[in-house]
Length: 471
Ligand SMILES: [Mn+2]
Image (cartoon, rainbow, N blue to C red; front, side, top):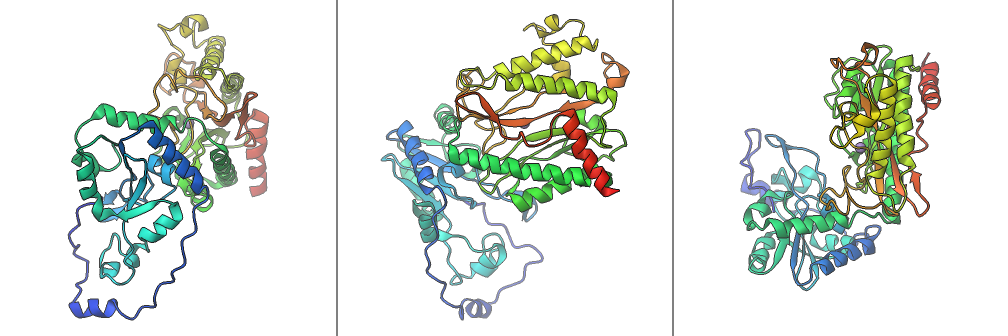
């Protein structure tokens, strides 16, 4: 479904009938070569079949969403709906996947009228000469291995369907949401199923996550090389963003380039500060691969190549917490076990530093005082979404058990706010997070991002080498 048409803007030119006649003639016949099937076409078909089997006899509607307005008539770059993409591999906007009650799948998409229809040069949002050609019905069918129909037929087809049992993936397509009756529980069950299907990654998905992580490693290398001349956080964001666009689809989430005390703000994406000498830079960034799987990596780097004694103390404590968490990443462990292990290490370290009076007291369920400095949990699932599988039930995710094929982050941190009087002055304004991505294996886990320098010595050598090279 598409947005209601936008009225012409003041800068639009007029189109006399004679021009339309002239523009729609005199073009070579487009080649009729079939579209190449996407890689893993059978994988997407199997996912659709599994979804249909979970809701037998019901119609399932999974839209990808539309381009969103950034300002007036300009849009944000389109990113497909995760669930729609997971079921189709299709990255074009506006499409809607419908799985009928008999289990057959139909992709509703925009036709590609070629240059036979004036819209190819008059429609600023869909016209081929404005935004490039769409695949259209026959090419989409070939490429994604699914039956296609024109988007214009969707409303009538759904009207017939809505009298029966159907479920809609809500929150993606406002037009479909508005046109469908409230049935929160039924629709939520569809969203949950689509989240839980993605808890275990297959080989193809793990391969794509590896690619995203490798590209992210290159992006971190780029940033490290740029550090000697990077005087603002914005430079760091820009350098990483270049790598994300060149080696992948985009960044998987807004890059956090937090220098000095900005690191104490968890989702610092304003990135507008001037970087000071002797500070730490907390870089939390991930490249999203062309297949939309994203990395989620954090490194905390000494700008000048060497940690100060205070920075090193905090960094090593976070590192020890991360190592303790890695040791809990194994099949049969609870999802929360890595978090518990990390918080235990952090709380005892905070006690040694005199910040917590008693680790034991701080760790008690009714207190959780360590959270004043650790702020967030240690893990979340990672995949097509950076916070993947977000609609999974607590019993399968947060209170579930780790299984081979699950991919999650391990990211302890410590954050001492600049105005926190419970913290010795020399530690205030220090924020450290170390984040890696792991896949659970039969034997334990593999740290997919292990090649990115992490220990104090390795990080100092990494940043130091770039400084040396730039002199
Ligand atoms: Mn994360």
